Amino acid sequence: MEAKYKRILLKLSGEALMGKDEFGINPSAIMQFAKEVSEIHVLGVEIAIVVGGGNIFRGIQASSKGITKSSGDHMGMLATVINAIAFRNTLENIGVDARVQTATFMPQFAELFSENKAKKHLEKGRVVIFAGGTGNPFFTTDSAAALRSIEIEAEILIKATDVDGIYDSDPKKNPNAKLYKKISYHEVLEKQLRVMDLTAITLCQENSCKIAILNLNKQGNLTKFICGENIGSLVL
Image (cartoon, rainbow, N blue to C red; front, side, top):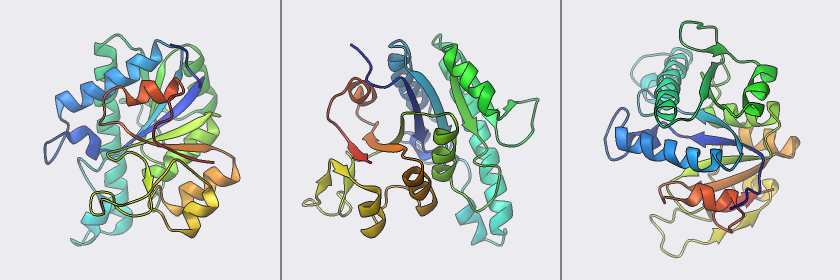
């Protein structure tokens, strides 16, 4: 197999790492995603990852319980660091060299984010996992994924979901929901489709960063997409 893309950024939600659990990191789930990454890594693809923290802590939920939005978001950023360290460890256990870079200074746990250093890691065949969001409250990990994609000059941002792409309505509630195979940034914004948040979509639009929405719960989908198979949805 031959990879269609040389450098990608994969956005994984924290919830994806829960598997069938209600909280935390499910060993089988995180191993499945690590193996998916390993499969495209051996094809020579340079891989960066942004991971969420919703499996451990959600700032939105915290704000409804008396914690300020700013404090809740900072706590959520720390949750992404926990997930990033776990993902790095899982990758290394299957022979994939990986590094974690954080948006805030915490040298005992990871490197501080550096655009140039991240690119050098990628060029040397290391997977780079970005944690800590953007380092600022009020921004989602979707926005962090868009920002990091642009900074490292990724060819495409791939957002992992549990559905087969972008639909005009919730496919879990509407069996007749229409799947968009290709759609423009403008249409996503105009139709208010829940692909990524407004900031992330706008960042990608202004910097011509393509977005793919892909169901990573289906084993092998990431490799199929990277090798050119027409699955998922593209925003361009």
